[in-house]
Amino acid sequence: MTSGPFFVIPKDDILNMMIQYKNVTKIYYPDIIGVKNINLKVAPGEFVSIVGRSGTGKTTLVKLLIAEEKMTSGQINVGGWEIGNIRPSQIPCLRRQIGVVFQDYKLLPQKTVAENVAFAMEVCGEPGHRVATIVPQVLKIVGLSDKDRRFPHQLSGGEAQRVVIARALVHRPKILIADEPTGNLDAMNTKEIIDLLLKINKIGTTVLLVTHNHDVINFLRRRVITMENGTIASDQGEGKQ
Image 1 (tube, helix red, strand yellow):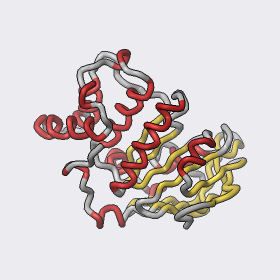
Image 2 (cartoon, one colour):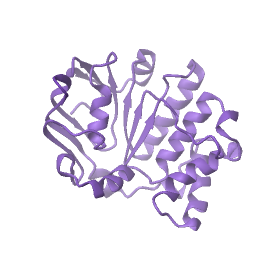
Image 3 (cartoon, rainbow, N blue to C red):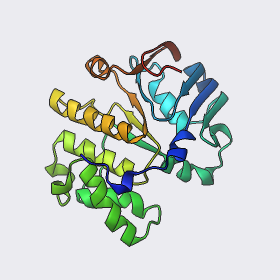
């Protein structure tokens, strides 16, 4: 894998992307606690895993960060953004700074690998010449240059997940969130995806990995935040803020 010139993110841009949750609570109607009194800092360039059983608040943390859900109280700051005060018109710009990879691939079945990745740029109004330049570079980063004309049904689970990662990278996000990206994969494909996330992190991108796979956590040996009942039960490891 090579980062190439496309993926050179200005150092000042990376350094400005501190993530901070301050006393963040999310209550779902009528009285279900999503997260409660979360205080958390993630430094630019960190690789942080968020673990916990289903329903402990892991995905809620992610949805609040990308303004998919609104917090009930508290404050989330990402770089210059105060997420609680963000206007709807600003959300697309925010999400170009934060790439998201989910467990369910959501690839368009009638489009090829290259077309799926290109579509993420086209919907944002990127000019055709820029799409034509960036898509091959991103596919090279994720190791799919030779699969660019294949359709989703012709891919393995690991290959499909790499397409999703490629799609998340086209805007050169300074933060990449991976929500259970290996949940449907075998051990070999899981290792390939985790290796890819580590290489993306090495370029300078902050990575937040949501997972329940303790083998992955043991392999990474990075900072681990454990969620229980909507709160942070523990915060351990390298880079702890």
